[in-house]
Image (cartoon, rainbow, N blue to C red; front, side, top):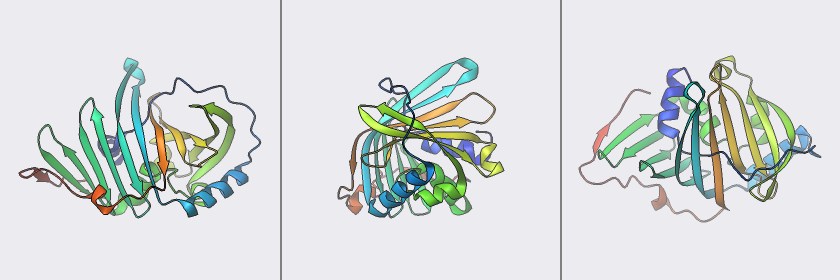
Length: 233
């Protein structure tokens, strides 16, 4: 991404997804866009929380290089999210309301970001598909059903989302989502960066939906003596 927001977002939330080796060929879908929207609206009304293992791959076309990270994610519908990156470089990303924290244990430092006016745009990426209403997707994206696919031994419907906003589209040209038809949450998301050939993926496994997640899961439990800074967002 080329904008300040995009660079900050990737630095904070480069956390999820990898290229799935288990995905199959897409087939013609029985799903229409309107039918998918209705299912997502229904699932959004039922969504309370989610936990999953995750991997992230960031592909840089100019050097044909892919970097991979893995960890766990926990999301609650009341604007709380915690991502624990385990490998290769441990760190924690915590979202509580309008504040985003990035903790780097290697240097014992916490960066605190006030999302402010960027909050809505951050939510479009960070929480895309996790309790997102279909009508909200229609508001922000042109939606196309690409087909159905057997992905990670799950039947998924594959959506392509093209941002309606010129500003967003100058950063992300399109997004593809593999949505599990049994739970209506993403099994994978693929973001295509505009004009570069670069992309990054979010890939989720061992998904548990609507488990009880206590407030303690989202506490600022940084070590004593951690340096705290507030960079500009």
